[in-house]
Image (cartoon, rainbow, N blue to C red; front, side, top):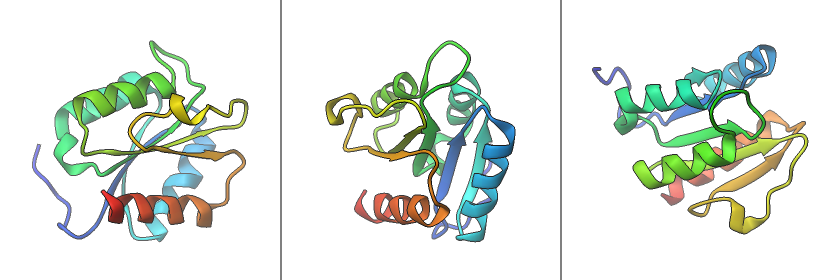
Length: 128
């Protein structure tokens, strides 16, 4: 897969099973200047990463999703396989302990503001 992104525009992989939430978050991130790749669950996210992991700087994932793994399991998998990708994890129902979030990842509770998410992602991109 060819890299269609300019080198200075961060790429975010957004993993969210609720379509309307994913669409709104993707639009907010695009409006903030990020390129956004979308996945409805962890299995799709891993397929996207296997195709273009070198493009992705931040994984922004919900915890509660259908499929073979939840967002925390996905984050752990991504951290082991692609350690250059920063992690931002979200949930309306769970607040993971800091030690449950791999690799200096961050947690933002739902409902979140787009400004808060954008701030976290910008900080993750500049710190990694």
